[in-house]
Length: 163
Image (cartoon, rainbow, N blue to C red; front, top):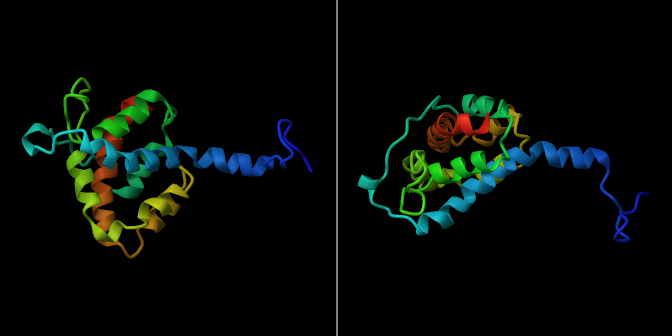
């Protein structure tokens, strides 16, 4: 049994460390999107102030395939884009061209009751395992529709910052 140097607790096996690191990008995306609700409080809800982004590929699986190609999903520019594009544009984010571009899609997903628990499921998926992500929406067609719009928008808006 391996012990960590600074404690008497067993060290994590290499396979567990690999599993944790490979799921990290998907977890960061889900965490970032979860934190958006908090950030929204600081910004305006005025729909006239929010630019509207396209839904991009408008498909959960296709958006996942785009994200799977990202080489910098954990970079500050990428995570900032994902977070700021998903909330209503306000003075605190107005300096970013992508601010609020996907906020309409985020709001629609947040208001969809069938999305309850889906975020936790997606969080458990490896970032490149689009079949896992797709399975999280099984039997939740309205949520999948809302998530497709949001994921497609974010993949479109943030691709240049994350690729």
